[in-house]
Image 1 (cartoon, rainbow, N blue to C red):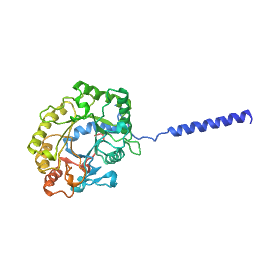
Image 2: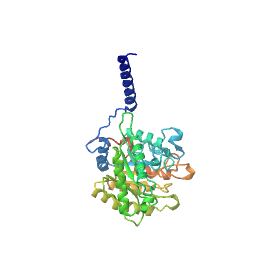
Image 3: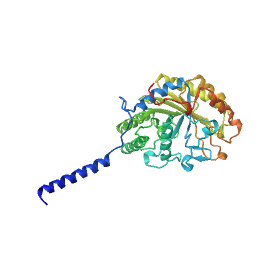
Image 4: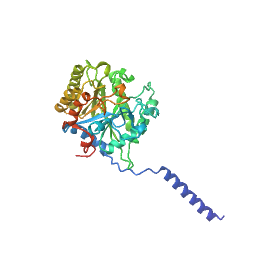
Length: 358
């Protein structure tokens, strides 16, 4: 082979190698627009719209509302079932999910729901314009900063997968370290908790997370003040959770607690230019007046961004449900239908433009 031919062959091989390398690294074109803030434009729009939409009505939602229900799980039956839809004809406008476990590389979260199923459900609801709420109950990193960084990287990686075929990411409200009185970080001092929250925000920023609106979430405990650990840094939504379980239903206490929550939290949220959401419910319902006589009057009187109910799951005999489902007795349905039919209640079919600039 002549020197000239040798040079030609070397050039050809170099071109082939370069092409193979570049083809292997080539990413699918994204049509997602990035705002000046570094977030996607849809995420920026959500930050504003979730605050102003409360003037029009309250988004009605449920934890895993289109992923599980009484007698079914989406990932097991591959159906399009939804307890709320089957009962009243409307899908939840907001869906809630837990992300605990994603940081450790697990296939399912701590509620036993596969992360693959969560991703599919998120994208389906995003494409229909629904609100997406996510909790991250982070495990104890025992002061190991390297482990904390790895946790944040895994969380960021999953959040990045929440995009459609055009590379458009689903904006989510992310509640880091939700205060439930049980998680290890609930034992931290106020300043320690706030520092940890901000540190995680910084780590996610380092991973170029562009589709998150940060929120602060706390479980109400009668007699204790709310918002004591609020990290006043890049927070746009506050959520308060309060549940009563079937072994200890006390509707007068429930009603008073709901009033206390709204009195304390709504004014605080408005003062900090935050949206306010409520996650609540009475397990097995007890009396459907909880919907019509306790919750509905509060929705009509106050600007509440969303009302999300607890998860329906298991078999009917277990009575683990927070909204009525097809087949439940009528006395547990009547009050819920009053809430459904009131104009203040916004379901997915009535929700428009949550991610658009107005």
